Image 1 (spheres, rainbow, N blue to C red):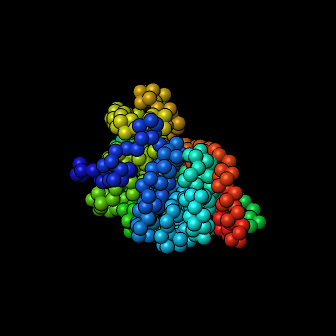
Image 2: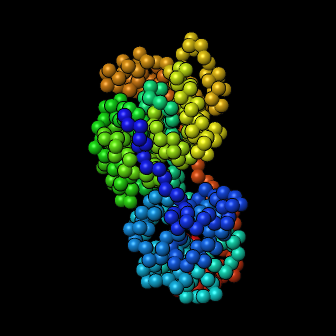
Image 3: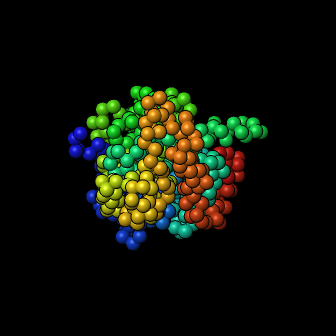
Length: 462
């Protein structure tokens, strides 16, 4: 295989304009918060003020006010922002219909108006557009932060259980059993979800059709498409196809295009022609993985033997749980240590990683604790060596975790699945920790008065 990287490197998140002009002043003092907000505005001064006001919460990424809808849609799909800010100061007519136009494609994205309470025209334009709330440019940064915090705090109520978990399994090289482990884990998670659903009484109310359901296995390990083979499945729709269709990705496309295992689990593999991976960027690839949060309760990402450390680091940063899989072999330990150094050089601390010892034989000499100590990682799980049993099951076209649930390997995989279920899908609660009680009193009274005068502000999110 060629040594060229399979993915194009990520673009500078600041964009070409910001990169040329240099980083904004807050960046020199402290790193930005974890969130991303898109701002539709033509005023650089407004963008600068908002960027400084929300720096502790996250970056404000500007989009030109005259940008076509397709560009805005692409930016939302790529960055998955926590909120969309629209500047209604001297707003053009197309911006008036923008919030309603986004409702179909991004129904759970909060839209916040930006303007001046001292200029009723901007508040009126925002109100008529149907935004969720209003940020006053004449307020203090703390007051603006409070408005955004109130909007984000209401978001979980609009969509309970909005996301589950993404677990990434990293392997420094092929042969460590990562693909088998990832496929087995995804299958056990899917079976567990089905068993829980079958044991529960019918709900009093219809289930939320938009809620994430089931498990997706992202078969991104090398050798390519091994998990598909283990699961006796086929797929014409690949990870590259998913990235290319990111803007139009919805539940219908996911369930019609993704490969579906007999258990109900979905599988998204690498393309048959690996050279296609060079046509997509790291950022868009990670955006696809994050986008799948909307459709699946668990996403298992197989990165066994995947070479580009930049991509692995970005996926690991976006994942809720990262398991580094290693065996007892000298080559496995040395390769894993090199991978950890590469990840550390890219800003991924060892504290974000946990070690899973795979194919463990207690008679081999090197203990699991010794390996964890040498690698400097916390030991999470030990999976026993069961090569003969795995090969026998594979020869029958079966997965050991389904054909022999009492086998030691199956029991270990079930323990991995239980640890994920016990942790739950409570990641991503940063928005609730921003704090703030809402909009400042003066602006709030003006906003509420205007809403009441025009009929209660239907669709305002209060």
